[in-house]
Structures are given as C-alpha cells and as structure tokens.
Image (cartoon, rainbow, N blue to C red; front, side):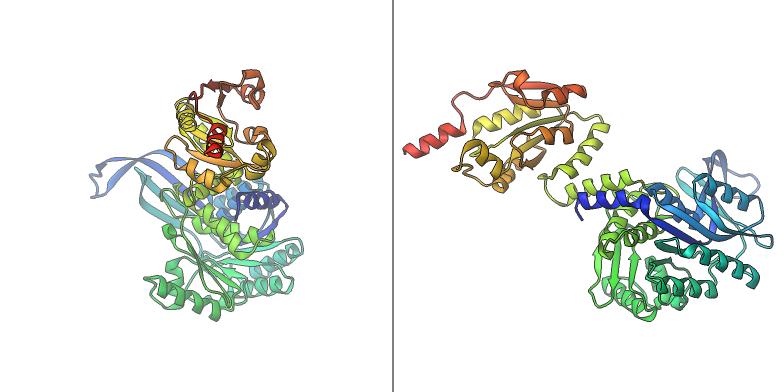
Length: 486
C-alpha cells in the first residue's frame, strides 16, 4: 500500500463501529530494582518503584481500537468485585459502550500481576476464574450480543480461555455474523479450533498454530502446511499466522500464502502484539480494505508495538511514521513527498536540520556537484526537489530535458552529499516546500532573497534562505551549446 492509501484508511477508522466479545482482564505491572537476595529464601528482592494497571486480554483489543479512533462496544462477563468494577470504570472513561458487560458474583475478575526489574520479568501472579459461564449468564451475555449486533461493522472475539467464549457463545456469534455479512475475526485459544468454524479469519501465533494443527512448525514449509490445514479444517475465509519478530503469514482460500516480514526496529516485548494485529485487520476489513492490505497495515502496527514494553497500543501517527520509514528502508533515497514528509518530521524531532534545494539538473556537471556539496554543509540532511520531465519541458522548451527524470534522479541520489531526491511536477517547488517544511532553503547566488520561491513560507516557521555561488564557467546550457557546435 502507498502512504496515501494508508492515510486514507486511517482517516476512515472513526466511522467504524466495532463489537468486542471476550475475556476482559486487568494487567498489573510492578516495576522496581533488584540488587540483593532475600535472607528468607534464595530469591531476588525487588524494591518496587512504580505500579501500573492496564486493560488486558480483550481489553487490550479495546484499547487498540479506541486509540485508533474506532467506536467500540463491549460484551463480556466480569466478576462482581473490585477489579471488575475498576475495569468497567476504565472502559467508561475511554468512552467505550459498556451496556453489554455482565457482572457475575460467582466469578473472579482476571488479574495478572507482573513483577519486573531492569526490564526483566521476574514473576507473574494470576488471580482469576477459568470455569465456563453458567447457562444463565451465558444466555444473558448472548442477549446483550444480539442487542448490539445490528449496529456494528465488525466483531472481534478475543479468547483467552477464561470461560466467557463458551462453545455455544462462539457458535451463536459466528453464525449471526456470517448471516448478517459482518466480519468475525478471532484471536483463538486452545488446541481445538473447530469451535471457531465459519469465522472470517483467525490470528494465531506460531506456537498456537502448531498446537492446533498438530504439526511442528520449524521452517517455512511446515508453517505453510499448518496454515493450509487450519484454513481447510476450520472452514475459514483466511488465517493470519503471526510469527513474532519474523512478521506474519497470510493464508487465503485458493491462493498461495503471503509472507510479510516484520517492520520492527528493535523487539523488546511481543505481548499484546497479537491484539494489535487483530484490531487492525478487523478494522481494515470493516473499512473495505482487501485482506492483504489490512494485513500489511497490521504488520506495520505490530512492528511498532513489539518495540514497547508490556501490552501496548499504536497510534495512527505511529503507523504513518512506520509506513514512511518502511518505504525508505525498502527502496532507495528517491522518495515521494508523502513518505518523505514523515521521515523528515522524525529527523527534525531528533534535532536534525533539513536543507532543501531544487532544480532541473539536466546533464549533471561539476558545478552542480560543488553547489550540492556546499548546500549539504549548511545542515544535516539535504533534500533535492527535482523537476519532472513535463515540468522541465514547460520551463526549458520541447527539446528538454536531455536526460529522463528517473535517470536524473538515480544519478543525483548516488551523490554522497544528497540524502533524498523527490520529483515534483509543478512549475515551482512551492507546494513541495510547504509539505516538507525544510529548515534551510538554498538557491544559487544569481537569485535575490526576495525572489526565491518559498522564502516567505520557510521564514514563517523559523527557517532561513541561503544563496550559494556557482562555479564559474559551468552550466548545462553551455554544455549543450558546445555539443551542438562540435
């Protein structure tokens, strides 16, 4: 997908109405330091310095959806206890529709307490109920789901095996969603995936897929066999198999698998990444994306999340940044304006000064190289706006350019002093300058500052204009005349 397509999709998210059904949990983190061993037992002593409580389980799916701007409704069962009320209030504060949340005094709300020191998890303590819902509570939950069903664009089933998503509940929701044409996406649990039969897609990780298929996944061949088997046996439309730092694989009926490598810069913690993938793929389907497009965006988002510690979310801005950086990593330093805008914002946030100049650069010569080297010395990153072939023709006449825009861009991008080349089609670079917002605008000394296009704009955001002397006796026009005379 292009940057523009991703941006268009992200702008549609606030119109998406999502229903999340599953196991709500409370994730508690106790952060501290450890420097000694307990005199009572051979275990480290953790001095707690910070505590944090977050929505976990299905709540992390909700968090991801809300951060992205979707309208979210939740149907679930909580214990009628302090943790259950805390989760309910946290959802309300996040402007989540909680009318479908049922309280059951016989259940204990799931709380997972993680104790960490020096970014290392030392211990996890679980307090929860795992037994299936009683028939009475099950019927109550299904009534709430049915009441919400007609108002949603996508249904998320977040199964953590804590008893909320019983077989009857799963069957009723998947059948109803299928009957009404509503995508039902599932984060599965357990060994038997037949309970999810007929769902739109499942998002197991590699370990879960291996367990459910009965196949040891140790290479790409075994991964493809497991994916194809689950797709067939569970009668799915698709399967997205997440592979931690290796990315994800997409399986669809009657199509070859698609493998998407990870976009993560550094992997700190994969917990919660599956929830992010589930959220983005489900929203993508609801917004009309093709499955491979939705998976591509989800993969970008997961690459951001695994760079954070603990179950986390990803914002629309972070996805756009990841898309822009990915485009630069994947291709060359010849970029379109939308991708380059994101990259330059990140560089400016890091304190880098962006230098911009522009021109036709037809028949590159020593004068050009000297000029560009001097421009680069004025800051940290040099961006060269290159007139397209059509733009050059309008400015120089029908016989120009002598060299095509792609060839000109390739040669310029190979110069050590040029960091990025971006081609523009307008007669002036004003629109490009307004998009990229450089810190320093450079032109030749044959201009006067007041005649430089973009000067007012650059100075309005605190930048400046610099004029550079050309090397005497070097010009493209002179070279062309010399060639014609020979």
